[in-house]
Length: 350
Ligand SMILES: *Cc1c(COP(=O)(O)O)cnc(C)c1O
Image (tube, rainbow, N blue to C red; front, side):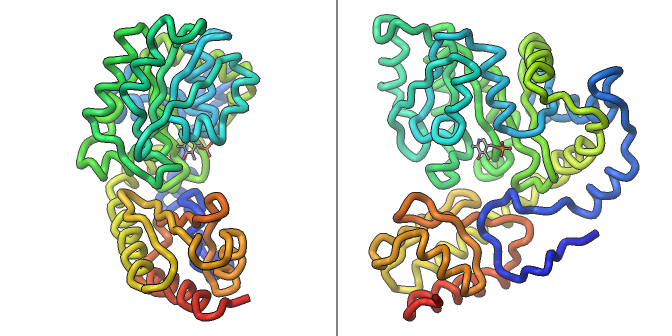
């Protein structure tokens, strides 16, 4: 297995860069395969059963990406011209709202705090008189990506679900990083999914599978999503090859995510201790947002300077950087990352 790709820069761009483990490669080699568009792939079926059980739902569906899981959740539960309510900076709004050209659903972003939508505004938006559109779905996100890997409390999730259900709206959870949220709360993933009708989870972020995501929910919705998946080209053939890595990811890789969270905290503490004009948010999980607005350099420039100093990060708007810890970031990488920042603060690397 090749883990090293000849690049020794510290890569904090995203947890999506994680490579499959040796155990995943081994499972892929031995996986029982079938044609998932014909008789069905046995390993994909197994992954779907295991995912449903871990998420506390009746059924689950393997899909290529979490973007597709969210799209299918809307297609299967929302009719054209109906409304979906979400916190305004949710990934389904900021990055995936082009899906509306396929779903015909109207997305309304509501203000929130730390990724948790304002309950009064939600209640107001759910009132029948507040819009000619019928609200068919309320969607939450945990961990909340744009808010910096935050984790809305279970009580908030329950309050959102209660409001939505009182109005007959379905509840979806974009849980791309649900295993990180579960670890942060000291709960099982099913405890977070309990308040939702459908839940999406990404296998290829911190869990380290090469590709894949799942959508879980009740049997009728998942069967509808299975038909829709075929329609949009998401049905794959010997997909057990990927499902086998996903099984390894789902059953063995969640427990170690606390290490990523601890490393993120070390990074944040180290950056704040540099004493310069940069400040880092205190992370709840594995995402650290760094404010560089007081440095006289914009985020793009910081990305280029840090890159030259051996550290890869991504910009978050023009004033912030986003650092994400993952399985390939070891304790010794934290001081290396801090050295790169120090070098760039002392006059810049470029
Ligand atoms: C990454 C992410 C997605 C999309 O996942 P892909 O598998 O890359 O399509 C959706 N929602 C959230 C919150 C994410 O962080």
